[in-house]
Image 1 (tube, rainbow, N blue to C red):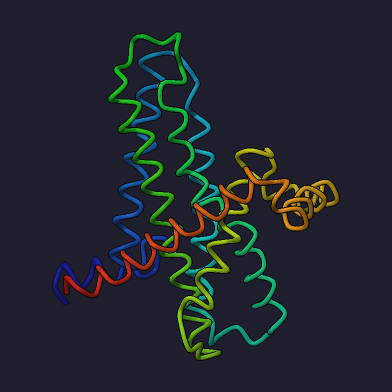
Image 2: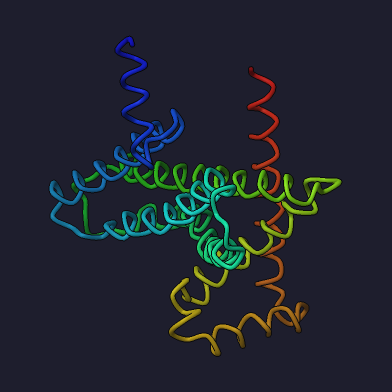
Length: 232
């Protein structure tokens, strides 16, 4: 067995380094975290440490979808499978939520020690990682759904998922809820979402944002999916 085969066998035993994509993602996320740590140490400001937490929350649904994808035939209990799928659905908006962290470029107005290009590159790297985690995670679940239900068109699965993601992004960014509020504050969260669904015209800001983001994320997903096939 050559060194490359031995290395691949070693990586295959580590869940989050199983594939080449996993290893590239891990490297990319480490780069983002390193940029944030370096900025914090150099400037003495803790402004952007929240990005690391947001990235961790985005990594959770990716791990769940990867586990479901590779273990679906080993999972005998439908209850466990559906529970894991539900948890994934709750957490997956965290991946696309990081895109809105681009709003924070230039937030630390009192810190003149860091050039703006550094903050842009740092936050953009987090947004890129979140987007990749979201796209790959949705792709895992799409493959599972297609195998089980043989949908006639991918959009029957994709757009509802992206609409729910956009709803989650809006609820997190503007209403300031998070995934844990489904357990800690479910009634308030449900009321806010019901207002959006039942009164779309009076909630035009929310309706417009959710629609635009859902279409944008659907287009990004489809483009990357087709692109991956075109360059083989």
